[in-house]
Image (cartoon, rainbow, N blue to C red; front, side, top):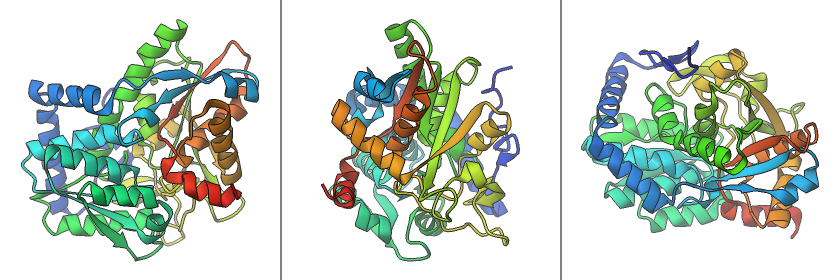
Length: 398
């Protein structure tokens, strides 16, 4: 039996995780979205429009690059990068944003709403909405707005309404709450475009399906370039969309080791991290069940990462299930290791990665040392670091 069969089941569960932890009237609306999605995605028209946009708007397929100088620097296994940073708008987020914006258009919605952390999902969604001609509203925490200035400006230029979120931690979790509140005012006419493989069913499935193009391409490209499948694949995990995007095509390849890399922040021995897979316990957040970092009352804990796209107290339900069945292993990288990898990749390969993606690069360099030079690691380089350049330069005194 394939690991992708019946994932999720018809109630939206991946093993014990997922579902719809929502009032009945909201469940009805989510089920309508699911029905529309399953119907529309089967149509030739939708498939052709999306495939054409992937090719001619996003610039897919994104290449796989053999990073020989960081391979040499790390010592050990050969490190390859799936270059999602080269996509239009600079990250993997455009893959599902185009899917969601097109779906909203096909469903006749009048406004698309979303949250953003690092601003990559926001920029990608604002671009996709401009392209399909549908109004867009993005909610973003005040702390992230201050930190991710370039993306904030881009969203405004692209014509989206940006709503600063001042409640709670003023970061990603509260941006989700704020955007969801707005969505609830008119769920019949609004479309909520969740930014990762999280939220109530059908979103974890839908975002995964749109992102799975990454792994489908990578599987074919890697075999063409090397004659084999990679020994190990790794990707950073916040909500987990880029990781599910690359993992899905390899889930049934038992010989391919899959590793998700989450943020250890200022250290796993401090409260300042977002290592949900390492320390999370089963709970519910934002309308679904998953591992969460929560207090004794079941309230989400304040989380932290140097990467605004990773500081989420929950994680995609399919990741939780893949951890349970031991198909994917989850490791953590701290801020210092992340910054080091950011600079090494920039200075050895001339590629400035997003801080999120630098977590995966850091673990790849660490892991490579334990393998032989004949073995291969494929890293999903999920985004580029334009948005982080000023922040890093200031932090490192460059």
